[in-house]
Length: 84
Length: 181
Image 1 (cartoon, rainbow over the protein chains, first blue to last red):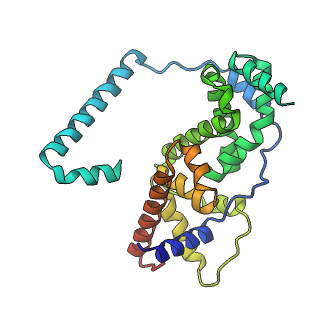
Image 2 (cartoon, rainbow over the protein chains, first blue to last red):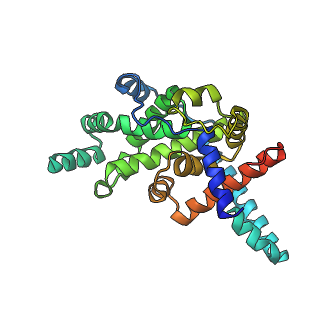
Image 3 (cartoon, chains in turn brown, green):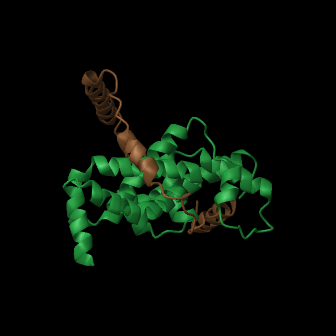
């Protein structure tokens, strides 16, 4: 996509989704709703003790996979960097 | 005046509810406006404004008064909006009626038909939230890339890349539908 195409796409996008009115305001004061939110007790996520472990396991597996891919297929490194 | 603002920020950092209320009233409009630009739905923007300030309230101890409140609040608001866009991704499209309602009156280009505009909006709604948010702020809202980068917590180059990728994917999608932009 060259610069001209890029400009054309920008114009098309602006036509499709015009900018939001800058002076748009919330309906009234949101403070009462804020107070209600602050009063709510935060719900404890279930199995919170193991949640971090699940995430860690997944992150580790993903990292190992990516390292393996980069080691066996070095040509994939630019592609991986592009999608980071 | 500036000294007073500094006192409020320091009090907020120490967990003062009064200081939080003051900051809420000072910044709710700006935060709401910022979120509205991203999600384009007034009711959702209100809910996410509350969510943003709730996160701000929870993170008061991590706030650095020297960095200023507005930029910090904007970064949190952007993350909240991004989380919402991710959660909404299953629905996979923007509400055209909402867009039309919120958006400023378009200077309609007669060369671009309503159908193409609608298809473009729908295709845009199917992009990944990360790309969408960058393109929304930088292209649709025409905000300076530096401002967008600060809000997203990425570099200006990364903003340019995301915008480029968003436009390229949008073009591909439209071409797939037989529309040559």
